[in-house]
Length: 401
Image (cartoon, rainbow, N blue to C red; front, side):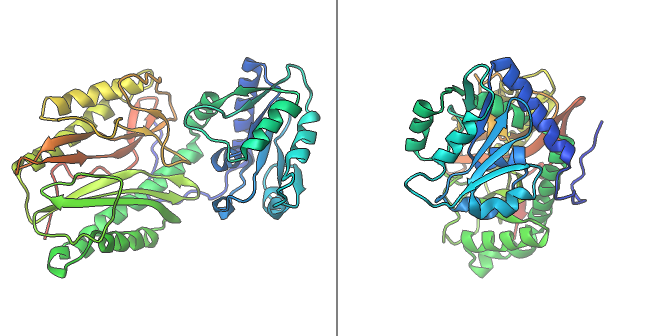
């Protein structure tokens, strides 16, 4: 059984073989669907097949295109500003235009390049469905429908599936960033134990945590949410806020931290001083539910098997509902990836998939108020079953102060 370490930093660059294998898998899909090529336009998809890694995707001004032909290597059709970076990847054919150029902005060059593809079936794959987007103007999409000469075919699920099966190199990246965040979480008591006496806010605790993530080796942390409240919290996506942490408060921090383009995504909970038995029991419930999800995370089982392993445990221990809507999801070069752990998803788990286990429940705390308790860990599916990537949380709600 391969063991993925949480400490040693992998190589930052993927090997040429990595991209050749990704392309071969995509071309196998094209053969199955009778496609002459695929057109990709988003950061994660372009990066996955080309290796083009840049922060410039934060600028929405310019569209970027990567064509995967049915035979051969990818073709990049990109703004001139990106030529140096793209030319340093394994992509040999890089075509550029001086963007921004609102009158055209790559449409003519893209159409010309597509016209050069051997047209055996007249079908071009694009990500047009759920959990995907195009990141190009709608007018350009309409132009492709009318002028490309191709029937545009939705390959959203196929591309999501290709990316969901991680290579060993990808898994090592996620394992590494999970180790970074695990070590940072372990340091939190050192700067948050006196949060009550020091009058610290959620925002101040998270700021310290963000700096600790960087000290531990994170590249950046685009997602750190936090919430707190008396004997529990009632939201998990809006904070941190300027709310001052008080005695008896429960605090959650959930982070999607990145190393070389790959995310971790897990949370931790703490109580300052002490809290009710109801809240402690809710914490233990989601912890046990996570263990049940882990035991069910085997190749051949489904995402719905994970849901069915976790949710009944919470129901039988006082859960009023699940406000998150799912009990975990895929993870990798996006913070949340397909598939979802829901009652009806039924995606088959395969070796190489990285998943989150995220049981969450509404419950009545010691004051009879509805609160939420959410726990999340990161795992990888191996031949023998699941392996933890995040360092397991404490089995009982940690008390600080």
